[in-house]
Length: 134
Image (cartoon, rainbow, N blue to C red; front, side):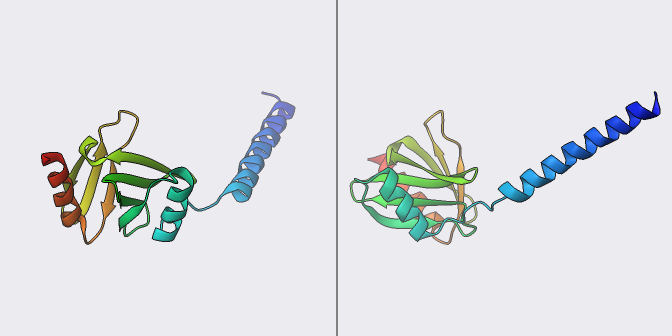
């Protein structure tokens, strides 16, 4: 290997490292922490006909679950740097309480399982068992 090829390789590696570092500095933004206000705003935009009656917000701000006046449920969660919403009838969600963590697994094949750590997890799990039993 010649010295010129080695120098060109080192300059290329340094340039790539500089570009990656600049992109990280410019585009790094923290993921949004979901609060009831932020979830309510996003839900109003995505599902304007949904009227939330009760909220379950994750302690760490990863997700929020809303019960609607018509018996539907809406899930607001993070996807990358954005918030996304999904609306479901209660009967199409499998829900379990695991030591204060509500595990929500929609039967929609495109949806992922969401965990909500909250004080009311057991109460919400019972609510879903009542919905499925109807």
